[in-house]
Length: 316
Image (cartoon, rainbow, N blue to C red; front, side, top):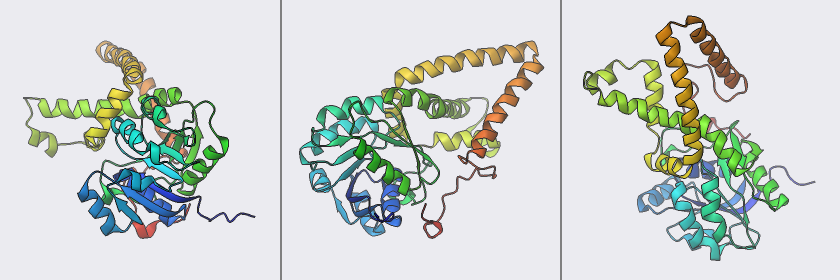
């Protein structure tokens, strides 16, 4: 019988060591998902910090060196950079290696990366739905993916064993794994993640631009709702720029739906439709309760967003 705690991959190469990449490195080591971890990042400062933190066995600026001999390579770079990274590493991917990513957009990733992947490798796009507003190698923690969803979007004709192996890797890190098409993923995430971020960026920008209210007053008198919007709006600007540009069709579709619903809400307020407002708020409150019941958030005052310390991490 196979050891359930045996490493799933021998060498995992992580390209990009921000919040997600460094959390994968920490999780893979803490839970024994890989024997060796190689890390590559364009920033010398990031590479130096990764070496100081000791979260990887190898750290290099050379992409080819990082992926050589790796049986799992994960692109943890902004969506817009994935295609070029894939082009550079493609000739150096080992036969049978799994190439994956962590991008919040899947259709654009497939279009950019797939043409470069050799037939001897297995390209399985992935999206772990986890994160915080912080970035950089210091922001990562081993338990980031526990009880969070990781969506795999394998292409037609995918290798079933490779998908099982990648699924087992994410399960070892504590994630719940779901498989769907890239198109369906992008539509779902447009409403559950991309549109909320767009709204947050917009409302925080609006508040900052109001001439009648100084920025110091916006900060001083921030209520809990606005504070939650600022947390979302503090997310990495490069990453989110790329997400909106690469998932624009789905985002624009959801934005259109949002505009229609906002018009209906405006009409309720203008006409004094208290019953309509009450019914809407009751329905949205039930959705919040469902999210908590499914373990995807907590009812704690900080909504469970404080990162646990490394010493608090427990194997999934």
